[in-house]
Image (cartoon, rainbow, N blue to C red; front, top):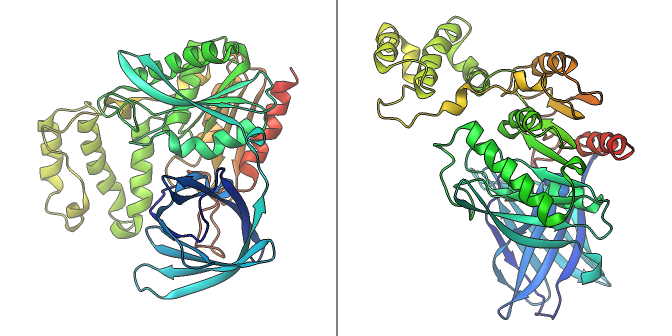
Length: 425
């Protein structure tokens, strides 16, 4: 999910150690938990927001001040502003949350909530270690997550699409570390603190970074590759079978929201779903052909003259103004031609595939096609799971509670149960 600025007004004075509080939001049958961490930094108290349900881990809050004995903070997203107000009562901070529309500034709803202090010490906490490694002459930055009670099992998060850094996997990294897994996630080349350019890289080059990260992770943690698994979502999910096929010694793979075809097919499927109502049934198929030509040029599959020929044949149509036609000098993206499907047939490790049935990006039958490929492989422990009312990012589609994006409740549960079968080997 996306994270936005946190504006926090806090009443707490600086202490030698961080203070931890937990709270929850209830609405009908929906409940989610969150945590607030208050830390003294340079003479001021800074606040950090975490919620596994929201896939958020220690998101820094901005502009921390205090107002007598009350704690207040604001969370601003694309569409909503969330105002939290707390007043102390006994050992709790009783309060409420107000949700406003950013567009109209109208109060949409309010919820009761409170914070309870958690008496955590350093010995209660997992250890996080910032590390760097070199891949393809690039310096890449990552985090090693060490559990309090390790299982001698490891999990690496392979990188995903666009300019996303490791922060998008921090909440899950904490979750699996609490299960006893030693975890490593890192900033993809050209994101976060890492060197390089992800846009010009091929999928194979990005997978090489993942493979180098695995070797580094195994060495630094002293966990053999056979006890390490990999997990990825979307473009990261499509890399899972490729990496498993290249490193037969790896323990297992978890592929989330993985398309059965090329990345281009998924992009076009997403484009069609987003624009169907705008083009209408009569025009959507022809419009899709024209848009595909734009993507084909971007992927290096056709020359510019061929693109212009298709463009000129359709440029007088009313719907053509909604088509994206790339410029001739656009940077090519050969990643669009990559498909992980052939590599599912080549794996021998346990693999789990999860697809949300409200996913508007990958084709609906992707999980069925992938399962047919896995059946042809030498994997003797695989699981293909579909989750109802679940989006591409594993968020729950819930019209009764639209103000927060929350992970589907069964998502991490089914992974945890499947991992137990791996651990029992």
